[in-house]
Image 1: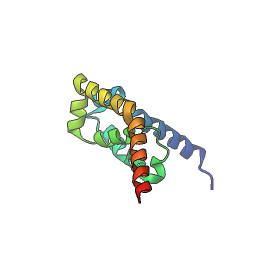
Image 2: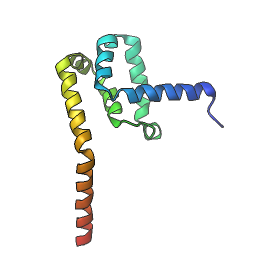
Image 3: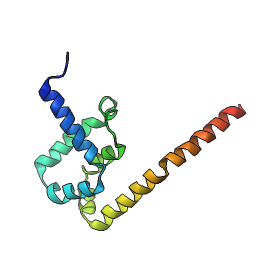
Image 4: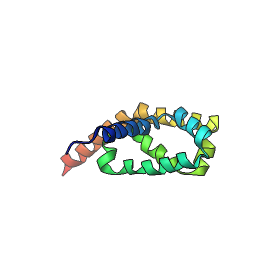
Amino acid sequence: MAALPDERRRFELELEFINSLANPQYVQWIAQTYGNDTSFLEYLQYLLYWKQPQFAKYIIYPHSLHFLGLLQSPEFRTAVALAPVRELIENQQFFMWQHFRKDRELSHEGSNASADQR
């Protein structure tokens, strides 16, 4: 049975929101604006179902799921509301993106060499 239009729309909206959590500036804004809003925090908790494989496969930016988990913590929300913490996250995220492909290729080459030696 095909998903009803309202279910599909909700899926799309939640997916878009989850993917937007990969943006540290947006995560900071959420922490500053809704960090103590009980209803919003319950919504974030509800969204944790996106970590299940059948939903996570639709996520474009895996960092978004990590930030969704971190936003559950009051300590993280307090910390990320500060500019230096957000900047640190941005720098670390950029560094990961900058080197991820190269590191992955090197890792893949290493595993191929190990297999060839057998």
